[in-house]
Amino acid sequence: MVNRVDFIPIPSQDAERSRSFYVDTLGLRPDDKARFEAWAGDTCFGIWEPESVGMPFAPQKNGSPALQVDDVAAARAELEAKGVRFFGETIDTGVCHMAFFADPDGNDVMLHRRYAPRT
Image (cartoon, rainbow, N blue to C red; front, side, top):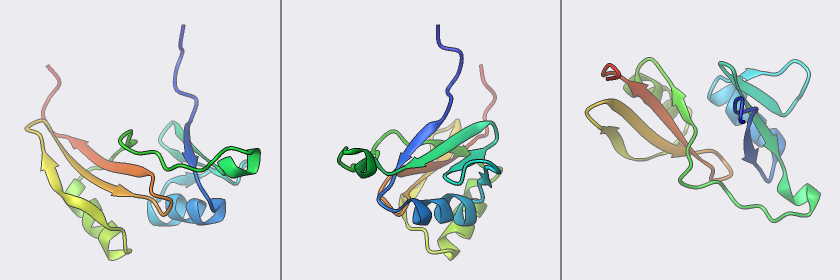
């Protein structure tokens, strides 16, 4: 019934600020036709302001989009140098590395790298 995920909605109180974070800080590819859409591979991040349609703003918590990187430690260091603050240490699950942080609106995001083969 479901074919795929069309986009990940990113609630924001300031769409321009969020766009700058996702494009300039994280390096997602800006969409050439939609100002508030940015891409990680084939996944679209759609920035929107809930209050503009009469809905209360609330950051997305505990449903972190897992952004795949080649090296979590290196990506984390690069983002920390840009002022991104992480929650705790990088986690090694025995299968992958994960590092959690939040965007400027408090939406949870994760850096992720699986290093063990799938069984």
